[in-house]
Amino acid sequence: MDAGDLGLVLIPLLAVAAPLLARGIRPVIRVPIIVFELVLGILAGPAVLGWVEPTPILEKLSDFGLAMLFFMAGSEIDFRAVSGRPLVRASIGWSISVVLGIAIGFFLAPGEGMVVIAIALSSTALGTLMPILRDAGETDTPFGRAVTVIGAVGEFLPLIAISLFLSTRTTPLATAVLLAFVALAGLAVWMAQRMQHGRLHAFVRATLHTSDQFGVRFVLLLIAALVGLSVMLDLDMLLGAFVAGAVWRIIMARAPEKDAAAMETKLEAIAFGLFVPIFFLYTGVNFDLQALTGSSSAMLMLPLFLVALLVLRGTTAQLSAPPGASVRDRTGARAAGRHRAAHHRRRDGHRGGPQDDRHRHGRSTRRRGDAVGAALPAVRHADPRRRGATGRPRAGSRATPGGAVTTASALIADAVRALSGLPQEGLGEERESRWRGRRIVRVGAAWHIGVLLLTETQALATAEVLRAADPGRRGYTAESARERAERRALALRGGFGQGDVVHVGWSVIDLDAVDAGGASGPLAMIDAAPSVRWSTAGGWMPLEAYLRERVELLRG
Image (cartoon, rainbow, N blue to C red; front, side, top):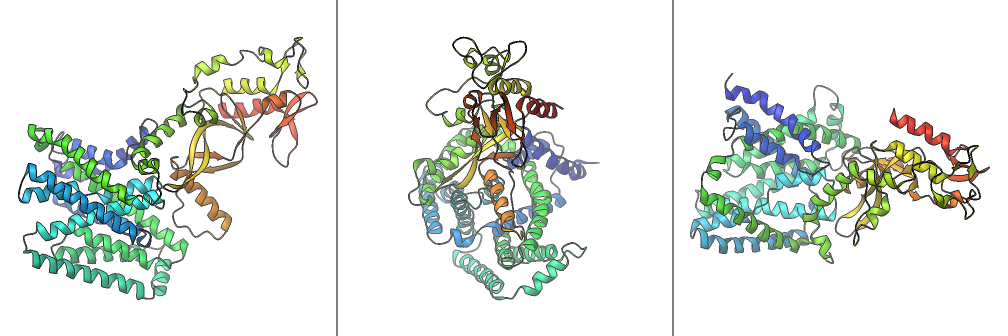
């Protein structure tokens, strides 16, 4: 088996390894899966190990992966939301980037070279941005829409510039060809808007779960037709794929939600489960690492171009910030990755309560882990604050035959020590900003003990429990189910991982009040014994027995 045939086996293997690596390091740092796919492709390709060689079949599969990627981008963008002022501002920002890029290119490579440098410095990889925004749940937020329109302008205006100024055709002929494609694409969009889709929707629904799969076949035909048109006109295939996605979005706009969601799931599986990973891996395989590392001038220019790209695209992108956006909002795009990474580190390692996170700014945090555990009472009756001045038990506390005092605080401390080292669940808090929209962000972590949430410093009462997830476009019949799906999406948008358990609306329990004979949340002192109301419909039971039972279940 040569390297070409071996690639047909190794590419799927690397495609499986990429998400495992991305998920594995997520508690430390959040890195998009695309980065792993590119790096793995470089390592397996001729540049390093030489296990995978470029072959015609892999090249064709990669091309179709690129087409599917831009089809999905075209089908996900809400053109009504990004048209008008956002599109104009993004276009102005791109134009400024081109002018500044030409100025930089004039000093490095006067002539045609400066045009190439300007286009490179003003370009944005929409195909890379869209999966990242999608996985982060940011697509439908003001932040996501702003980044999307910047990416779309930074992707397609450079393609148009290349077609006009760097084509082998004369400029008038290149312009005529481009206008012809725009006219034909506009005709396709107009027909999609005007045609009745009832019969098409019915046929798609009838074949959703059969071997006919008409909807998938129709999408492949749509992509092939418009990509073929762009290739026939000697234009970039991305233009045709993107228009195909926009046409499909129009066609399915009035389809039943359940059918649209089913089709979306199928297309996502085909695109992001098969063809798109092949494209990014094969891009890495074809990367000419020697051309970069073998030239000292190229290595010296690399950091300069990275800085220039950040300055040109970063500063001009500020024009697309919504009116009234604060400085924090404008820098959110750069801080989002670090912010989420910190949240995920706290998910596995944080042992403090929500107050640690709320009061984090302006003062150092408390020590966690063993240091906090060591500061807790070593035995149930060792805390003198739970006794009166005479050393007798406080009112409401219960003395055991040996003279020890059982309080809610001591029982909770015992439970926390027993739970040390076990996985915790996320504590979320709903927030809203003009720039990033509504989301549920992580403010801490706790052990879930029935109606209680325990941190090493506090006891909390549970409220809403949900699991972060992307709702997609599902055909819910009940409004409550749709609202719950939206709540799950808010948690995903706020930085929680897919499937993470999130507690929202929790409240702090006043253990001192309970120890003094009162009540707080689900805890109360009943007949001088700390007790817990284990459900809204149930009665009270001793807190000690409740905690023992629940902790034993968690510890297995």
